[in-house]
Image 1 (cartoon, rainbow, N blue to C red):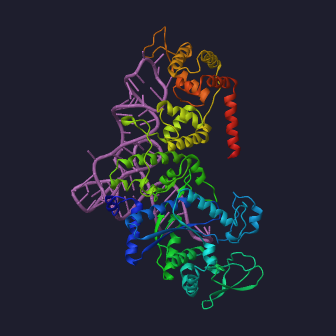
Image 2: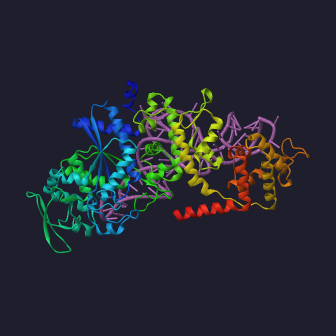
Image 3: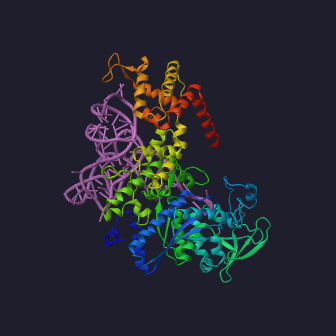
Length: 563
RNA sequence: GAGCGCGUAGCUCAAUCGGUAGAGCACCUGACUUUUAAUCAGGGGGUCAUGGGUUCGAGUCCCAUCGCGCUCACCA
């Protein structure tokens, strides 16, 4: 990386650099030579897009920090899975719900995998998370709460917390309601017989022995359980604090819904003689109605859904943009995110180093963004936007990438999927977006008597055309056909004469509405040339039969049933 | 009750340590041997929510007010 860039980074206003500078101040105070970033994950369901966002954003800060420190400070990102948490509720979107119901309350890492592919439910969801993170190429180390607890990596801090039990309670109790405060315990013993994470009040604790005493409310049996060795876990706020302290976490982001929790955990962390991490509060993702996205509601977008319609870089682009402002995370933001990304990729090449540091693609690609893919040469070179490709899909009236490619190649003959692999994937995404969002919005109508006659004449005209008729010839023939129908004659058109009237726009609108289900459309001669003369005849015949309307209704019905 | 975010063109939003307010869509006009557009050229349109303050200079920083919205206060 050029020295110029490194100097500019010291004052760069982009938020990842601002965050990195907070860490610079922290290591200056402490003198430490390594920095630990953490992101948390609750594996009671499939990975959430918010989880992805947190890892993506934390990675951007980590990378900015590495640039500022010239690699002299070692860094690590720990993706910590709280897989020892007890299962509270059976998720809706999993099989074997009966089996899961029998394991309510047990640690996720102890419950069998309802999908039957992994050693436990937690292992399954952890693998899903890691699959996503690996697919995006994040550098991180995965951590399982269960294995950390069992391996004793938290033992020293757990014992310290037990020794300062009263102090911890004094911090927690004021934040709780009376009835909850009466039964609250920061320590949750694992039932030695049932394996359930017990949420019971403690009847005693012994700091010297490192144990807690409690009673099983179901049987009245009393137990004495060590807080160490994985026999006991912590309530989540003390758990978070203990983890910060035990592992020495330096940086962790959280959504704004956790502001109070971050404060409380920070206080507990200090009570354990730890220093809470530097924090960053990001705004929440909202659905189309402005509601918070949550796993339990199932609103908003999943990672898979985003990746159906656009590539991972566009999702990173979305995550980079202004993390402190609430963002609607819905299908319609995808094209914008893709095109923002593409234009920043292009802009990067002509930017000054200082400007490059504020360019999202600098952070998305860890300082080394790829070159843009252009079509055409010299002054005529350009790149195709996602919005334009969506138009193309609509023009071609096709969800087949090959047809869209055909359109592109009419204007740029040398361009192929081999020379432009990213354009190829963009076209694939555009085709799917068309299928799922544009096509359902279509509305076909039936032709009236005059229109039926015109369409029959159109078939007859097309049957006289060769298969390779040019768009211009077809266009001209279309005008002649329109000119012959009184309804579409326009004597006010430029160049029109009483003998040779112009053609009203209504003629073409009629074709779009009946044949394509849209109010607007492509130059129709071009459409026929691309779509094919014979297929166009078939399309018109289907319209005359009422098949287009019937097919579209059937299509909508299957979608409705699927949704 | 506590905390946070947002008010910029008709709509959706940009504006990178304060320096002449921009884009996309929409709309209007014109050109391309007839009005259709992955074409090109041009145009209209904003009291940057309101009122103060700091400054040579504020959409940007500070204070207050109004409006909209979200989150937390049971669990994670």
